[in-house]
Amino acid sequence: MLVEEVGMFEIMFKTVLFPIDASRESRQAVETVANLVKVHQSRLILLSVVESTAEQPDAMSSPDTVANLLESARSLFSDQGIEADAIEREGKPAFTICDVADEVEADLIIMGCRGLGLTTEGASDSVTNRVISLSPCPVLVVP
Image (cartoon, rainbow, N blue to C red; front, side, top):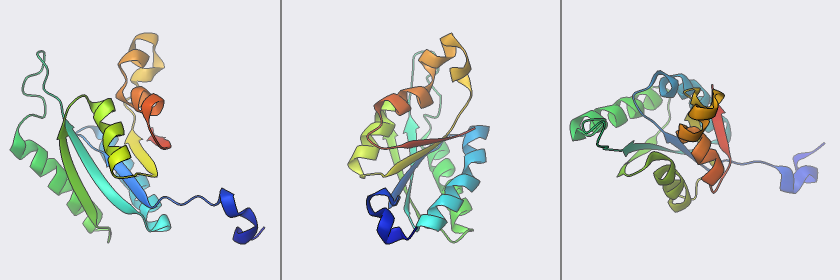
């Protein structure tokens, strides 16, 4: 079947949003993100969401920590010939990720999964689960 015949079923990811944090799961998703961005010649946007809570007042709150995380991620992609824009935002992660996806008109969000959704208690706390529910575009979860 020719691409012209498929027409409306052709999938293009012009803009890919990759929310990152310092987790192992984010690092594991890098290869998937790089491959997809190369195949579709997508614009890549890295997003770091800073959430400061009463329980974890210092969690990812240092501007230097966030800047280093974003620069490190940009460098990883740059080494593979991929330019990435970086955005830092404050807020609740799931809502902020979806808001930014809407703002940048993302065609796809790619996220690592921490596996919290495997239990009833974890499902309600999973940022990934919330993003899937609220996202304005498809979400690819990399296990």
